[in-house]
Image 1: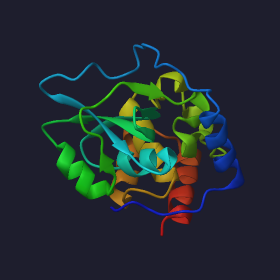
Image 2: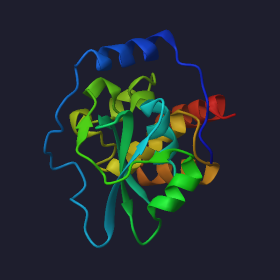
Image 3: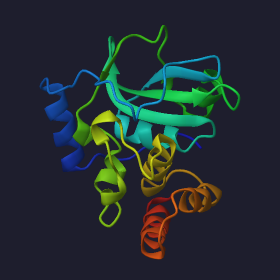
Image 4: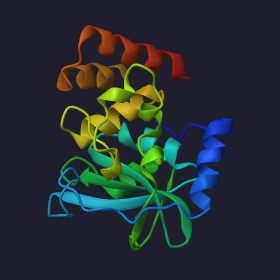
Length: 188
């Protein structure tokens, strides 16, 4: 599952320009975000050229609990990842994604809500499933399902992940059909 190169649409470029003009948010505290790193949960950041692509790619990887777009000192576009230490580690995630692991995990500055789970937010028929976007987003009460669904509508992941998300999110036939169609249409 390597990093997928894609040309940014005019809307994507405009969103990034607004971000660069200082409309970043300090990350709010929220009950919907995963707990701080523990012996079982890790917290890392990856740098890339487009955090929408980063969230899409990383959210589909095994062991990823949640993703959030933002920035940190020295890296304008980063994705913070909470991951299950029993299922993966930073080096494995880096190898699978092809993104640069940010050393020392500096202070994370969250991107605006409109930049979080970008693929899912902008997917007709499914965007209404996304809740608490100011905190990174949840679907069916889960940050993990939100990250995975965002990945799938962006064309990342596998058919096995698609089947799992449909089941775990308890999607109705209409929503499951939308998700499958977007996934199939955007896969390379």
